Image (cartoon, helix red, strand yellow):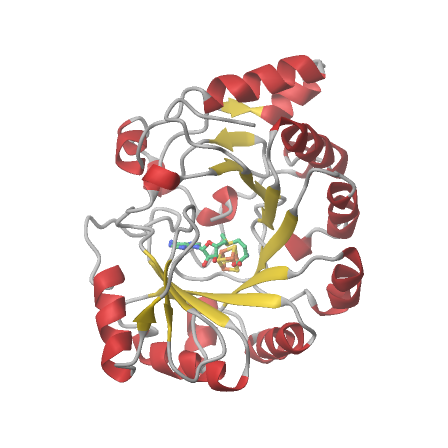
Length: 327
Ligand code: SAM
Ligand code: SF4
């Protein structure tokens, strides 16, 4: 087991496999993109697989693959197959924009990958294409429906953006009348390549809940797993749950069970804090498995208690783009 210095069990890894993406969501990246890493700066599939293997041996039992857009990496399926070979791994899941997943759906099913989070911040085509700055709505919608109808556990991640997609909150929930899909609304965080700075947000979790409960007075709080970042609800007659994630307000640090590794190998023990070590350099530096594990154990033994505390160590936290960190 991996236990941190605040007695939290760290069993969940968010592993970013690339910082590249084929969309340009305006809350995530500037339109011109960011300074993407060179190929040799990214971890190879062998390095990512090794890190996964060592962390599972240490107590990680859930891995979520993220990015950038994971499916821009042509060798992604090799990594997924390698990770699936780790006996102690109970859950392997993916967060994707669903533009490129289509050709891989059958193989994902064969591999037993069930949980897919689809980022979709609008159900209206024009709104979607304005936010993502690309005209991929139809393919995303078709892949979303295909994933749901083929039996994947699909959760839509919807970032609530003032003046952009608030009018889509209720219509996207209508999907749940036909399909078993959960929708999670997230507070926007100012991780967008430094183009925006703010200390408060209009659409915080309370405002999001007030908006939804006005349209659906029957909405009911339901129990959530202890480590859940979302506050979860059920609406009568809807086939999926509704979650609200206070990402900006940060009410969930006390039960944080997660570790992040960026595509460049930086280990982030709190989303709001600076990277602690670089595992790519550690691995390439010819370190033994023992030394790699010891380096991981050291940073886990030195985690900030809360995101607000971690942020004090990292003045430039919001200058990063989520495409580097992986969300
Ligand atoms: N490209 C994939 C996708 O969009 O699902 C995976 C990577 S993306 C960086 C992971 C998650 O981070 C997405 O759900 C995205 O909406 C979220 N994200 C990106 N920028 C964000 C921001 N400024 N505030 C809150 N969430 C953000
Ligand atoms: Fe790409 Fe995901 Fe960022 Fe959108 S949120 S630009 S899909 S990495």
